[in-house]
Image (cartoon, rainbow, N blue to C red; front, side, top):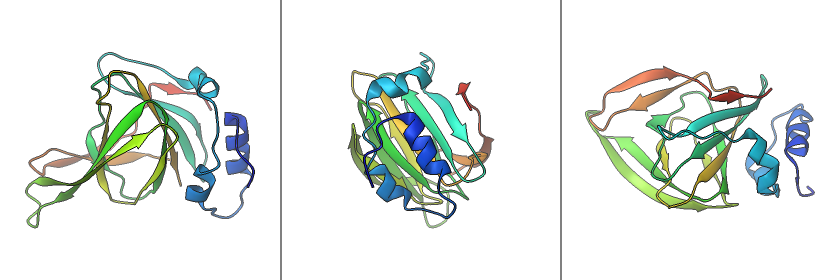
Length: 171
């Protein structure tokens, strides 16, 4: 596969597949300059932003924009897999698990995702992204279907279903 160098090429590649492709393999070929993504950025002092680039019945592509010290909630997706790539800055991904009696959330791992690195989030994986650096950070997310909702967790194990909301919707 040749390098994917624009957002339009990425969308065309995703739309051009009639059968499931290895999204993880495709993410390795994304070489899109930051300036190509900037038109999809939005920022808030109160928290990170969710910016949907495109959503079809087969996939959803979005950007999460983080100011310094912002983070997502601790959450999981019950019916979708995600492939993520840091576009700008550096993010920390923390993974969690429910205790045996499901009464508390325990951290099970942590990794740093620097710019241009990608990762897969398995279905039902409980995780959180945070920007612990002094600069802004942006995360590209590819889902194998539209994200309608997710399960949000508190550290005491209490959870609730949250409907997807976006700060910006482009297509």
